[in-house]
Each structure stands twice: as structure tokens, then as C-alpha cells.
Amino acid sequence: MNLVELEKIKQKALEEHIPIIMDETLEVIKEYLKKENPKKILEIGTAVGYSASQFVRFSENAIVDTIELDEEKAKQAIQNIKEIGISERINVIVGNAVEILPTLNEKYDIIFIDANKGKYPIFLQEAIRLSHVGSIILADNILYKGYVMSDYNKHKQRTAVKHLREYIQEALSNEILETEILNVGDGLAVSKVLKK
Image (cartoon, rainbow, N blue to C red):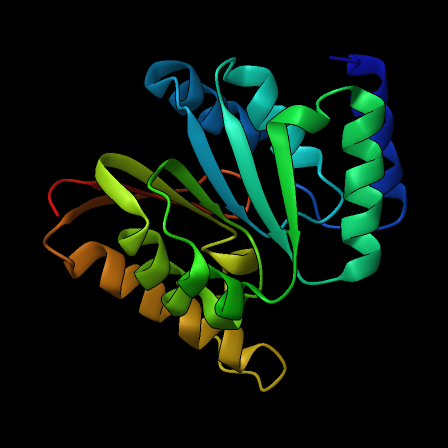
């Protein structure tokens, strides 16, 4: 794996204001990857392939399926993954996750959600369906700049905030999940699937 290329992808994404996983969030996820040693990871929201590449880096046996809506970003991700030298371990699926997820029937060890915030409750339901007992479901940006836990009600982000609140409520109240909300990066929800 070419770590120099991986670092270049990170720097370019930061320069171009493409949202990628924050370092402190990645540190927490890295611990889960090392502990769980996943074989199959699902990522909802590829962007330029940075996080998927990091997941492969920290879990030596994993294959990642990752879904990206934006065709240009998906192309860039495929190119980046090729340059890092890990194409055989990351499968980029281009299209709308809301439509693609119901067509998947794999069971994943780790599912990472980092896409359209307004669709998080849908993603959670699909993640539960695609999980097995012991799977870990991770949702990034769950506190969304601090808005989710405040009385934020401005029009611009209202829908995203509302759906993120729904996600948290469902993840905390669903009896098959054990969920904690970590105050790292922009907030990370970690749910372990206890039963099916």
C-alpha cells in the first residue's frame, strides 16, 4: 500500500474542501478495526476513497464495498484507490445508496455511514438488515457541528438536523442495538448489533 499516495489524497481533499473523515474520528475507528478484524466492510459515501483506503490499511483481511452517488467523485476514488495499489480490496459502487442498499444481500462486519445526512434513518434500517450479531454500525458527523444536541432550528440545515436526531433516537432505543454517541470529530455514533 502506497502511504505517500494516501497522504496526497488527504491533502488534495482538504485543499478542495471535499469532506473526508477527521483524524480523531479515524483514530477511534482504527481501534474498532484492529479489535474486530473485519472481513467485510460496507461504506455509505465514498467521496474520493480516502476513508475506504484507511479502513483497508487498518484491517488487513477486509474487503470494502463503498457506495458513491457523485459520478465524478466515484471516478476520482477509483483512480485514487488504484494509485494506492489496493483496487482488488475496494469495490466502488456508483449510484444512490437509497436505491442500491436494498439490492445488497451480504452481511457486513462493519458498516460506516457518511453520506446524505437527511437519509441517515434509512441508512440505519438498511445497515441493521445487512448486519449480523456482533456487527458494528458507525455513523459519522452525527452531532453535525453541534447543531443536533442544541436547539438549532434554522431553515438551512433543519432537515439534516431533524434526521440526525431521528437516527440517534432510533439507535439508542432499538433493543437489538447497543449504542454510544462519541464526542470525537463531528460526532460518531457506534452501535453494536446484539441480536437479530
